[in-house]
Length: 244
Ligand SMILES: [Zn+2]
Image (cartoon, rainbow, N blue to C red; front, side, top):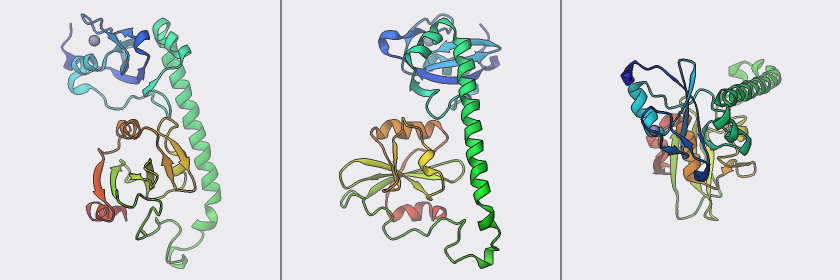
């Protein structure tokens, strides 16, 4: 066997299946049944299915965090549909081709949406910066004293996850006890930024209703966001002054 450091591979997707439908890890000498975080890898044109542990030991420092074919609702740990699960076992190359197509479609839709937004922007861009109202069109709104009026009265601790581009998501507890993920700063399209597996955008609250906060935080971290930094509003602004 080659030394792990010399193997190059592309992590295509991470998928999960029911334990009863587990698949065999294809790392030579392993053969364990894997189901929770099945790593699908392209190693020199050969599709390999590996458990997460074997993925890390096999590729060492070359291991990737983010799968290249992960979309908004697949490929970063989400369960496979029954049809996809069969493909994983019978024809993983075809499954990967489908992931690629889905990602292309999704990228195209995102691109079209972006273009639609651009078309609506010239009116704003035509206004010279100096002539814009003090609040500004492009800048994020200044942080109000209490950004989330629906926040739990006594549990005011929040957790901030910073994105690679400065966009943050803040875990806030609603006064009804449920967990929400609020965008910070609030940006256009925030309600389409997270996949259904993370939750549902509540336009009235300006935040996502998140049924499984642990899974949602995991998803964000798998997509380049920082580990949650727990603090209290407004101390959050002192930790991360640049987000105001
Ligand atoms: Zn293994």
